[in-house]
Structures are given as C-alpha cells and as structure tokens.
Length: 277
Image 1 (cartoon, rainbow, N blue to C red):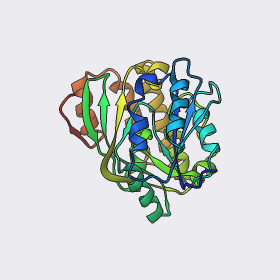
Image 2 (image 1 turned 135 degrees about the horizontal axis):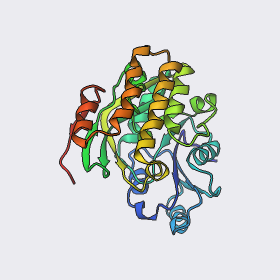
Image 3 (image 1 turned 30 degrees about the vertical axis):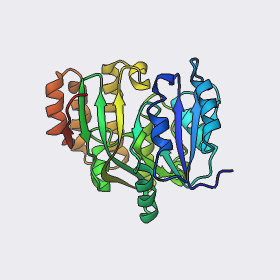
Image 4 (image 1 turned 90 degrees about the vertical axis):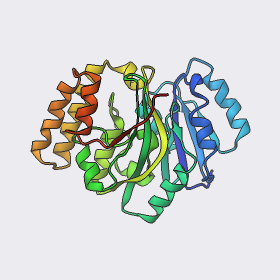
C-alpha cells in the first residue's frame, strides 16, 4: 500500500496520442509524495502497452484495467483503490505545471474547511480557435454563484478531499457534467470551495474529447443549462439567476465573437487573451 497522502487519478480511453501531455507533467512535479493511478477504461489502441511500460520506469505509477466502465464509474473505481487523503484529478490530454500538486496540497492542509481547491489555467479551445487564461473566483460564495452561470473551474486541475468524495457518494452515474454534480454535492455537505490565483496548468477542448464525442454542441449547452438550474435550486441561489440557464439556450446559436463578449460581460467570466499557438 502506497503511504502517500495524495493520489493523482487519471482515466484514459485510447489515449496513445496524448502520452506527451499529462504523464510527464505529473511525473515532473516538484511535490513527489504521491501515487499516480491511471485507469485504462477499455482502450483498444496501444494505450495499455504504453501504460505497462510506464509502470516499469516509475514506482509511483499504478495502472488499473477494469474494462470499459465509462468516465464517472472509471473515476470512482480508481478512487476506491486508494486511501490517500487527497485526490488530484488529471485528464490524460491536459497538462499540470510543476508546482500544481505542491500548492494545492499545501492549501488543503492549511484550510481544513475547504473540500476542493482549483486554480487558474490556460484554456486551449481547438473548436473555437481560442486560447486564453481562465481565472475562476477565489472566494467560496463567488464560486457557488458561478455554478448558475457556467462550470466554475476545470475538473482536470482540481484537488479535493477523498473524505468529501466519500460523503457525496462518489461521482454520480450520469451521462454528462459528472464534475459539476459532484461540486454541488460538496457544497450541500458543507464543504467550501477555493481557487489558487495562479496559472497551474493547461486544459484542452477539442473534438476528440469525451464531452464533444458524446453530445453535439446544442445538446451540450442544454445539458449544462439543466444542471445550472439544479445548482440554483439545490444551493438556494436567488431565483432571478435562472436567467443564466435560460440564456444558455440562446448562447448555443451565437457567433464566436459574441460568445466571448457574453462570457466576459453578462456572465462575468474572468479571462485574459493569449496569442494563438
């Protein structure tokens, strides 16, 4: 049994083309007391072979092969295999900067009432050909209110307490937005949310992602609007905030430049443009 207090959890399905992203970025962290659990969710390419080779080169890596479970159940399966205090989520096609794990673990250790800590990050949206720094709010109540507007932070760059995950019953068995469902449960259980105001990673949005393969764009926005409304109800947010999920339906049909304006003005998403890659 690994005695580390942190488990980095990744699920992967046919991820051989992304081996140069998440894996090296985690193994090169300045914080080293962790285990790296990778659940192969039934890959049919060369992922399994590459993962086996990976375990031979670094003792912190543990590969699980439960078969095809789907995203939420694969995450739950992986987390069930560890007793670590903290769970850091890492998507296989994203990158964590070297100080991410150290800063997030230190933050949770210093703030026992915080159940989850996020960070600022670079968002590379290949679908819209946009690249910008997303800067989620740092205060709990601001993050809670953001749930009525959008996803408050990137799932791939959060670290949370395993205790909170257990109290919430793990990731729900739903077909989308499993992260936002879990964050709502955390808040209802009395856990606070926080953000470290530093850029600690990169998150890619691309046509090959699970989200974009599973749903067409209009359906994506409809799913998000539904859980925005759930957040308003479950977290006792002002009912007038229902304009945000309603506006989500209109947002689907807006041109790219108008979407950016709406995000940054009406939805008050804090973003900073970067040069295109």
